[in-house]
Amino acid sequence: MVKLRLKRYGRKGQVTYRIVAMNNLSRRDGKAIEELGFYNPRTNESSLNIASIKRRIEQGAQPTSTVRYILAKANIL
Image 1 (cartoon, rainbow, N blue to C red):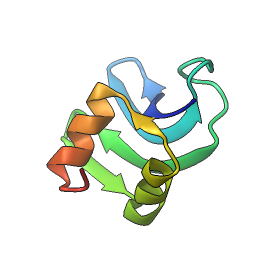
Image 2 (image 1 turned 90 degrees about the horizontal axis):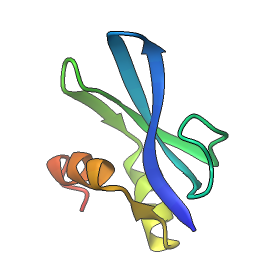
Image 3 (image 1 turned 180 degrees about the vertical axis):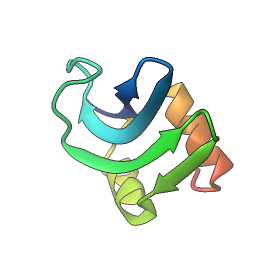
Image 4 (image 1 turned 90 degrees about the vertical axis):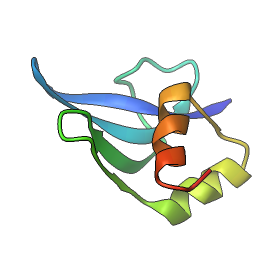
């Protein structure tokens, strides 16, 4: 099953995340199928590729709870 989830980047104390589509059995920082945007929790900033996210959800990808919150805040879900 494909999930939309966060992939961690950055160093200790200055973390950012990329929103990616990956297989649910992959590790958190494993190989992604597609990168769909990023989220910076320190500044609460996000940049999303809306067309790709909607396409992945239509294909059956399930967002995790954190990604669902980010998408709801951006009025995508």
